[in-house]
Length: 201
Ligand SMILES: [Zn+2]
Image 1 (cartoon, rainbow, N blue to C red):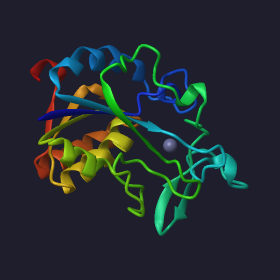
Image 2 (tube, protein in one colour; image 1 turned 90 degrees about the vertical axis):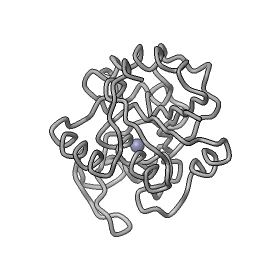
Image 3 (cartoon, rainbow, N blue to C red; image 1 turned 60 degrees about the horizontal axis):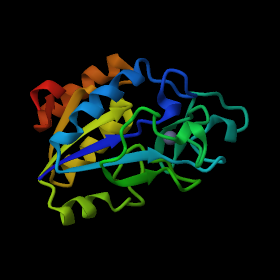
């Protein structure tokens, strides 16, 4: 059973959004073109309350991209993004969402941030996604979306740790920091996570 998990293809992560990923919009037609190859298609949305702890604007004297300590872990402070119910939190308007059987939302609790689709950054709270996938009979999990070096990466590592056979679809994803992502790709392949392009699916 092949499942596609599409991470955070939302307006705020597009080139015109508040936390832009360069060329993020280019992955939308690629993702649309591959959805029919899967038995199950799921998506995530970063979905924050407006006073979310990951926003620099909610910390006096802090700037965007400063790093603080939160629950014993480094936490990057981001520009306000993906606020619940706003246009910025909506999927890219050209993304085909008809096949999405479920949408998992993360980052919904004010005090904790969630890069991964499975757990928050401190692994304090599960989204229930691993149990959902297991009950659906998912054996092979393919991941793509935004940003490749952050939410896709942390999702794929958690998926691997949950026992799924994982593949990263490279041309259906874009990274915020391409240099950092090259190192993360090495880390993924060393674990046995596959990296493919949409054409070889
Ligand atoms: Zn976020």
